[in-house]
Image 1 (cartoon, rainbow, N blue to C red):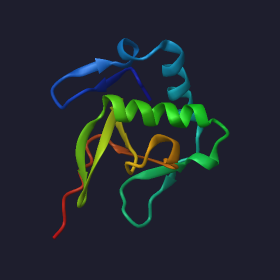
Image 2: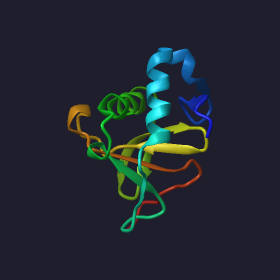
Image 3: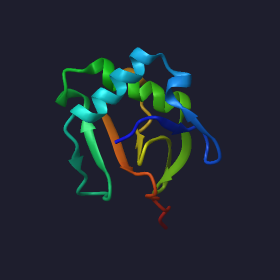
Image 4: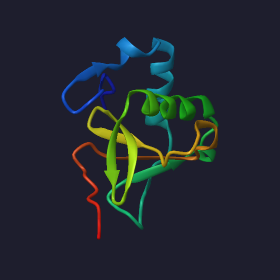
Length: 117
């Protein structure tokens, strides 16, 4: 999977290496590629990882910071969250403060979660 570009908005792509230090980018990409991802059963199609499943809290918190800083708003059913697309996948959390965030979600970049009701 390529982690070279991240869209800052739906119209403009920015290279991760242009906005983050090389060391932090490597930590984040290594984390994404190394952790266990579980398919969601209640709200597919997406998968998630849990902070406690890995010893790499720096990698987990790094991608959460990256999402919050460079992501864009998008719906997840009736909620709006900040998403960041890296390669063919998009990543998001549920919006808790970074130090309290324990779940990282991902889905194919083209997946959209429509509002219900």
